[in-house]
Image (cartoon, rainbow, N blue to C red; front, side, top):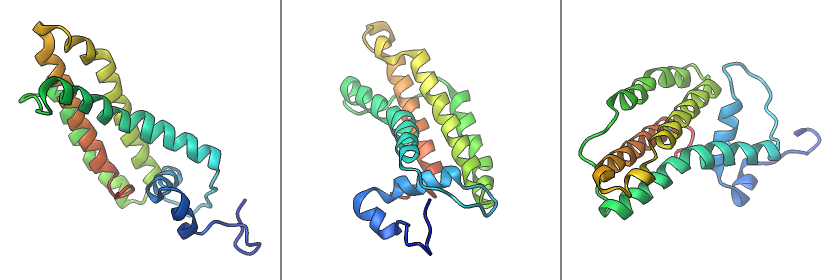
Amino acid sequence: KMSKSRGTFIMASTFAKYLEPDCLRYYLSAKLGPTADDLDLNMDDFIARVNSDLVGKLINIGSRCAGFVHRQNAGALADQLPNDELFSEFAAAGNEISLDYEERNYSRAIRRIMSLADKANQYIDDEKPWLKIKEESHAGKGLGITTLGLNLFRTLIIYLKPVIPG
């Protein structure tokens, strides 16, 4: 437990000397609801949340898809998305996420965003672009899947911009 009166606390500037401030903002936002509640900084929970959500879910989408696009098509994206419905669902979620931010319900915004990240990862896992790219007859479909994945990743990054500006 941190206590200002006992001197057992961490200054944000001290934290920033050793760890990425964007990660702390993300962690605290994921716990911050619309009411004025105390928040505890549990370093084990912090590490687990950042590794699971930001690295395991979010960065995984961009990393996997960008690698395929770079290797298979010299970095050029497909000219069409193979699943307009999924992209439209991600785009439409912006209204609810924006409202969550405006209502200062950051934890709900983060839950919505991470739920979308789960959908993007599930889509990529289900479509298996790494197999389709190997088959000449389906290589274009694999490129489309990874292009959609990068567009979904970009959308998620935009939604996280208020919390993770860097």
